Image 1 (cartoon, rainbow, N blue to C red):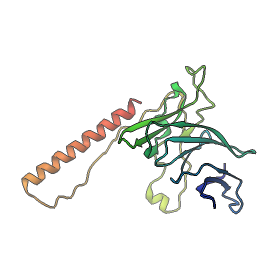
Image 2 (cartoon, rainbow, N blue to C red):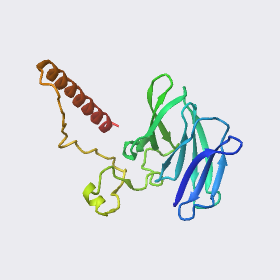
Image 3 (cartoon, rainbow, N blue to C red):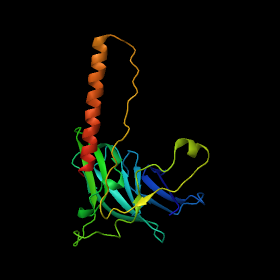
Length: 214
């Protein structure tokens, strides 16, 4: 798909999404008026399945659409609600999804009651115990394929694609190091800095263990 997705407002203050072909952006392919809420819609696209998700701060619903290469190019699918208004949201890497539950995407959302919660997009399937190839085409591996210097010199390699059929093992954080500048040599200050760094290392190790367990 060669789409650009825009969100904004109409002249009558309706929230709107517009779909354009980046090769011919002058004329929109499709546009949909959503509602009259004031919060800015934030789009997330699953390029593997062609699903568009719309989030907005202060909303209690998440809307999803299908991006298609035929008319209509933008098709409404469904909406789901969260228990409290949204304050923040981000999309987890594709390798975090649970293929055994037919989970196609996972978001992490912060609600108005300061709760951080996973928000899972699951496609109901009767035979969910078997791998659903149509839901999980090969996806981009979360691993760099080029160094900054090579990219800066004009390199543009294709990303590595992997299958999720047998899960994905996150690589160990080999060579993890910290570079710290300590302005004071006072022993008490140094001890505080060391304790802070130890706590940060423990937090990172816990995050890695949590991701490996998902």
